[in-house]
Length: 638
Image 1 (spheres, rainbow, N blue to C red):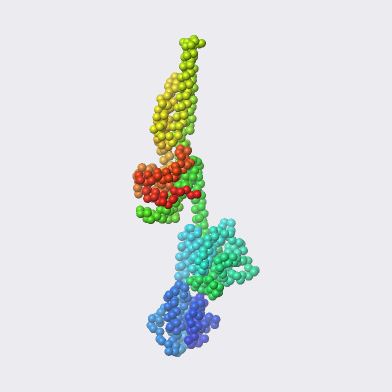
Image 2: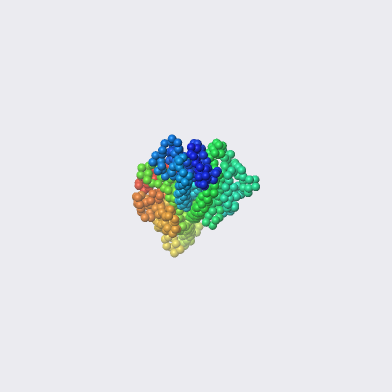
């Protein structure tokens, strides 16, 4: 916004004593004109003495282009045979009065004084509006947390306030390194997000950052060779532009430390002017003035604090993101066989949510997610298995139906059974000496019979162990295992005191005949408790307002629409839509993952068929499943 210099612009038809005019303006600020086109550049903050016809024309233009047309007040000159002005023109708020050749000097003096008072009044009003505008911008800057959006907002508002054609912004890191981040240009329509390109210390921006002082240049190409900074014209050449006037100010925080730099380029007479040809730059570019500097510095103070807050907010977000990633890796380190599961589920979930937000599918048109809600959902998906830290490790990583120590105990029992059977055979041979004479045919026949029985029992034990090991695999069906193990359960061997010992206990038989997976009922209950543990742990974290629903979303990821899920048996609309999306992603990854020791990963098509069956059975959301499939969210990122 330019400084308003008192100027008196007089139509060539007016007869005005110079002494009266010079009582208000310096000689260089007194101009005579023939047509309105001659004065538009100088009209800002001026008093115009014009004919009624000229007054109507200038007021009509002002009405049509209120934002960019200059501020002024009018005095009507009524001379010769010209028509008298109508009442509407005389009553216009920008008309201070009327003069004619017969008016005495005192009347002319009073009328011009009133016109300049009107300008001052208008200027005070505009200053109040400007202050309100700057305060409004400050509030907007303070409320914006996203760094890239904030930088764009600073550039846009700074250009609006100073009528600058272009602007650039730089940020400074903790090591005092200055980086070029973003620029805008109204004439070229170009913007650029350079994402932290390092800036030299002896550039204009580098100097301002180092010294903390504003630099205002009339022409960037006319910098003194002795200046402690230089202008690099490479950018101008690359876009066919001509940087002329420059205003570069530091962005400071509450501690008055420089956190960035704002550079304004080519202040224009009027914001709507487009600079393309050399004459455009020559005729329409003005130097920045002290009022522009004051406005830019006021904005820079607010922008600097907002910028620091935004960068701190971004640092906190990165810290929090790092904490979440570390937590997920800690969870998955307890169960290396499922490594990557949480990250894949988060990816499937986020892509499905974005597709849901964009879909026109009936029943989902009202489902929309903000940027914060998408981040909340992603974090919930990453942490959905956080409660597994509360599950015993031997249950969490159980790959077979029997625990490793249980299988080893069973093998030891098989070895003990073999030794017992052999001992029993040898004892029978010793007892044979009491009833049969060695060397006789009867003795030899009885020995061979005992040996055959021993070999048969040994082979039977070997076969039983093979069958047990096969039954220990989670993929073997319940019906097949039950038939095979029936004979094993009936096999007994003699103990130390001659008692019968079963080869297979009831507990082992129950585990080996599990119909699905590797977990028995007690162990499955422990695994399912991870959902409640997740909720309990996540509820202890003081989440921000935009993350407040995260524990609830994660808590419901194993619920089913028909109420058959766990841990609360929720159904239908009581399950958050975010949780329903995560349920689909979680089941799909569990079906297709090839890293589970208790099962092979299914082909993607087969997994989708299983999910389709679940949707048809009203266990998962059919509409969200359709979005999951149609959007391709189920495809792993390459």
